[in-house]
Image 1 (tube, rainbow, N blue to C red):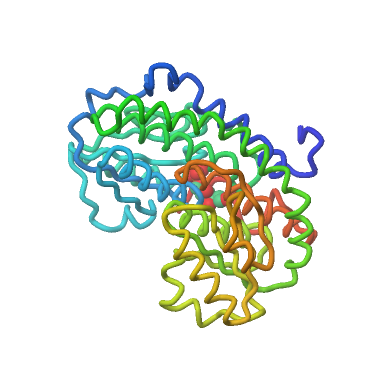
Image 2 (cartoon, rainbow, N blue to C red):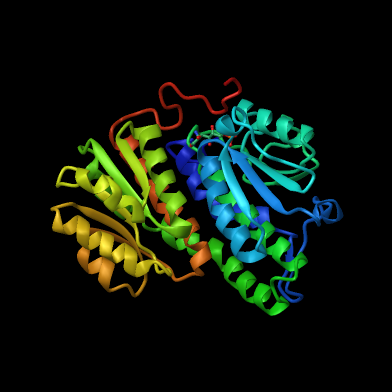
Length: 364
Ligand code: M6R
């Protein structure tokens, strides 16, 4: 059932182009420049004033990207909370709140608790979930299913990128309904979205290069992942993936925070993984790369095809296809997933069943 792959995680990484196609299928018309979400009764959420996203782990990282999508495309304020934090503070939700729980399994105890609390306070609930009939799916007013298919590896990969795809389209949907986006804008964004699966295929071709680089780095004990704006959550995700399956300590940081602390750690024993694809914050990231190099740090970066500056200052780079800035998190995700995969595999660890971890955390 691993379809010839050595591990489920690797198979699931390679399934991402297909999983994204399945997740977005039937939800848009390129000709009309329209987005459809039949599973969400828009009438019941049209008056919402705030969106709260709750999730744990990798799903929380997807939520962080989702905030940028929704605020950018639909201009609705979004807060993103870790479900285990949300449930023990005094969160504010009303009947003008839309709660979006994000969960691959639909059975994460803290996320279920956050959902129930919000419902009691009158919030509408539209969840993003991968498992049909799961607790979260059953208890929500509407469910946006990610069509990733069963995810067996403990490390979430295709569930994550399909969550991103759902959030991206849902943000466009809200932007369309609220009249923030014109049809022509939606058409042009959709044009980029439908090319994404092919671009992911292209990124997957870096597999061998990633393995070779991972070979040089598995002896290190600490890593720093830096990203900014749309790719700040991907830096967190990169660090989580590496910790989770290779047991190498890694921290993810929004790059602008580097000078507020983590820069003190930089030396030649702590490689820095920089998500440096083209974006509005490119120059800022370039400055971070220069700061790392000035301190004898080692930089592994992702860059966009045609890049000149970050690539020339990095020790190793992965060149990614040009895409819409909003879609760069998908491409960067593939690289950090494969890097963690190869690190774990090269260290001879149990990639699919890392120690101390369960696929779904059904108790607090
Ligand atoms: O099933 P869920 O999406 O609710 O699970 C949330 C986390 O437990 C999960 O994403 C976890 O962080 C993964 N093992 C990360 O790879």
